[in-house]
Length: 362
Image 1: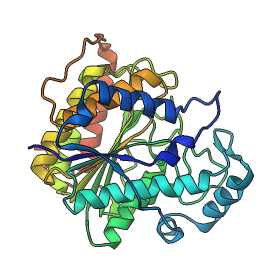
Image 2: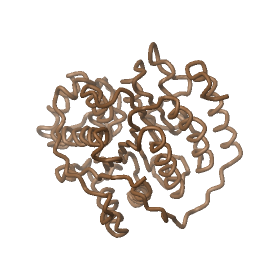
Image 3: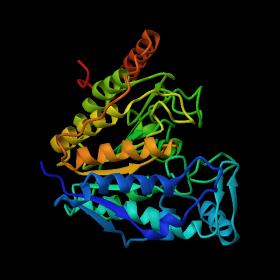
């Protein structure tokens, strides 16, 4: 399948900076990512284009997900600048940029579901998946609004999608998405993340599988520090693929973090570049089969700028249809203890979810 792939862009977002000493370097990552796409002639391919987004989220869009107190807080701080919490500065103009970035994700989802693109890709300038309904003193982890949830509710309201599968491959658990959709069977949220006992935000235990009508539609896969390619791909193949096929969503929303890379300064997972290629190939194949190739990708966490940009480039190249993507990669051999721990987690998740997904794991 020759996928029509769009790189979502708005120049105003490049103005956003968390500050020189902050680990999230969104503009720098974006610049290196685009440089790699140009150098490797990805942007010259006839099926790839840069999409200048025009949709801007409204208060109504945000209030479908968030409490007004969060909007008011970010709007107030954005006037002169301030801090939402100790991790998340709010530079002047943040509120307006957050509406633009959220609107870009909304537009990407809409274009995918209307058939204008097969794959939409946004290189985020700030996060979304830690943003809960309201801010109650918890860290928002470099996020303002939960653009993923806002975009999903937007396309559901417009009747473009009834069911969406969110696959969160960031090293940190997306506690905001988890919270917002915890009782909702129309969104299946799956997160592969570093063990919450060892990493922010400290949430996302395997036993948390949803509540009420949403029970069985939240899937948390906590991975021990030191998890590398073999165990990570095994978890995806044994848990993601069967559930994706059983759920049959209208669209896949992928959060692709590169903070899972072994050199990332904030995390302790050990993926190498070849893993991002394999993840992208798996996503391409599965989405072609299950949801007519409809994929929205948010390029999420990643705090080693060069490594994150390269991982994002490799995944984009695969989804753009480049068949000869390869890397000279480091080899990290996983400890047997790590492999056993991941096997135990996979089996635990299957046991917990089997009553809600009969026949998925025979």
